Picture 1 (cartoon, one colour):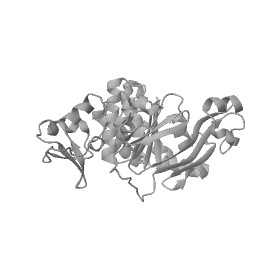
Picture 2 (picture 1 turned 90 degrees about the vertical axis):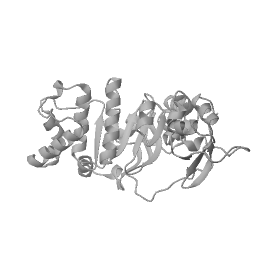
Picture 3 (picture 1 turned 120 degrees about the vertical axis):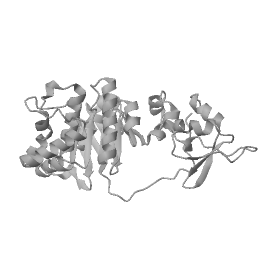
Length: 355
């Protein structure tokens, strides 16, 4: 049984225009695919739909918003529809129905000229397969998109050098792709995407083929770049640890449908169903949940002069303060007391039991 969301937790709203807004998006493969969205067959399970119509709904009525500057992760196992989703969002493949808005512009209605301009100036894509030009040196690979866009040689070379420095490839400007490691080649792909200074970056499992240590280093690089340049990022992965590490919010998909979307602590603390619960079962709760999830009322006879901790502090980070305190820690948000946490409460969570 999962921990319920804290009663005092208030929903937050923002008046900002979403960086990406997806509404009722469908991608159906098969005969008469256009007839599936909005029909009675749309509610069938994946197996039932395939048996009855011969169609596969790779993306099934998905809607979500991505806030400006957010790292939004789409996660699911192979066949969940996550890669098809990002290709529909960027119109690398055409959706069957639905709308995609990029900073208020309806990408679904864009003609080829408008779509090319959006891809060159507003958003960029990074894929698992680097797609580098083998006959071009690193600096020319990085500058390629700027060349296609029509920028003059001096300005595109200067910009390419700037992002090469940013991603840690200084000194390799004149190397060819086959002279670089896999991780370095992915840095070239990342630099190429950054060169056009896009507002939004889409990543489709970019690190899946990399060794674990290199993969973690590239995750660090994405986090560093996000901090430094503040891009909106939509990141596709099948790895929950990667999703929890990178995502401000995570959307879990299954059979083309959205199962749950929320912050990492919400997925671990309040999974929507058994599927999400199974996904998050092996994640150390103390590494993800924050203090608000385990705060409780003060028991009779307990002192109230313990240390004051933020409700957003990760439980693991609270260990030094709580373990050395003579009274339960006070958990506060915006100056308001949400509850307290004692050493016993902390040990219960760390032991993997329900708080």
